[in-house]
Structures are given as C-alpha cells and as structure tokens.
Length: 291
Image 1: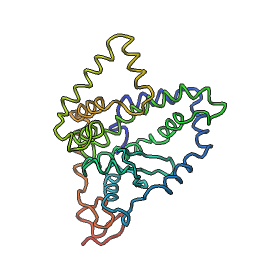
Image 2: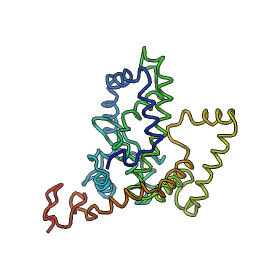
Image 3: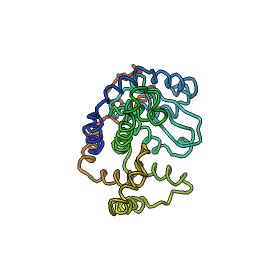
Image 4: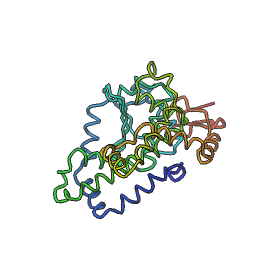
C-alpha cells in the first residue's frame, strides 16, 4: 500500500503548504536536537504496558495483520490506563502506538481494528514527526528560544495540516475495515458507548456536516468565527469526518483498493498471526510449521 493510493487531497495540499513555510526546516532540526523522541519514548516505556504475544495477547494480535495488510513494519504497541478513549502514535525512529483503557472498553473488535488501522495510517503516510511537532508547539513554544517568533504561524499551519491528515487516516481505517465501521467509531467517541449510541442514524448525522458548512459559509464573519473555533484543534469535527469517509466509500478509488486487497491471503499464522498463503509449508514470517 502506498500513501498516494488513498491520501486525502486536502492532506496533500496542506502538507505542501506547510513545507513551504520559511524556517520550517530549521524548526525540524531543532525538534530533533532537543531529544523529545527519547524523552517520550522512555516515559511511555516506564508508564504503560507493552503488549505482546505474552502480554495481553488477545489485544496485541489485532496489530500484526493490520500492519501486514497496509505493508508497514510493526510498531511497538502499548496500553495506557486512562478512562478517556484515545489512541496516539509517537516517534520517528522508535515508533509506538498507545491505546487507552477507555478506548478498549468502549469499542468492539472491528471498531478497535479501525482505530489501530487509523494509527498505522499515520505511520504509512509518515505523519508522525510533524504531528509530534504540532503537539509540542501547543504545549510550550518557549522551548524553541530564538525560533519563538516563528512558532505561531508554524503551529497553526501544522494544526491545519494535522486536521487534514486525520481524513487520510480515516481512509486507512476504512481500507482495513469499512466506512461504516469508521463512522461507528466516531459515533462512540462523540455520543458515548454502544448502549447509548447503537441506534444512531449515521447518514442523518453526516448531514449535520452539510448544515455546519452552510453556517460556516454564511458570510465572511461567520467563516471567521468558525475558523477561530477550530484553529486550535488537531482533529476535524466528527460529523465532517463521517461525511468525508462515507463519501469516499462510494468512490471507485475505494472499491479498487478493496478489490485489490481481497486477493491477498486471508489465512493467518497460528504463531505470529500474520497473513499467510495456504500453499506455504512454513510461515515465511516466523518459520512456524503450517502443514
């Protein structure tokens, strides 16, 4: 899988705009020099539970088939005790995905797969470094010293791109599952657990995004207000995300990707749980005897 096969056009355009900002390369170098990747990697390692074949394997085993399907190296996978449902990916040379206990409790298996695939989409699209920079700029721009005067425009450009990048990764989630499952995740995160939201009409909810757009486009002042309302956020509004993923699910591009993936081996190795071909005598990933 290549990012160009599914990336959202607004993501691609926003990234080009971001990388054209004067001073951006210097900020990237500064980010590396500060050592934040090691800092957060060490904190995550010491605080959260790393999942594996011997550590909560039922949850861990959701990751390898998704990585194989999207064609990425498997990142480290962690569980964080936090009642707020959330998942995030961090790192550039040492990449890891962390999911919270609140997310695991709220979602069913397919919905968890959609979230894991979404996070893997960030890895595939090489979003993670810039996302981490955006989060750092939000939490404390003063760390950049003489570059402080540059951080405000770069921060807002990063956040704008970050919102658009989430639309691409919703597509990665839909490639592994389907647009309806991705939409159900948005329902849970916006309205609460399945016991409350199981009967939400997703199409009706998506139409709320059209109403929002009509409000947003009702004159220069309203557009300015709505821009102000979202400019500090790193994710698009949920109804907009649902409308976008349902619309993409109707395109030929999406159906071509799904049809192409349907020809991949569906079986999985009993040991490493990665996809295998039925003709294999041994797993080519881990060497386990299959026949």
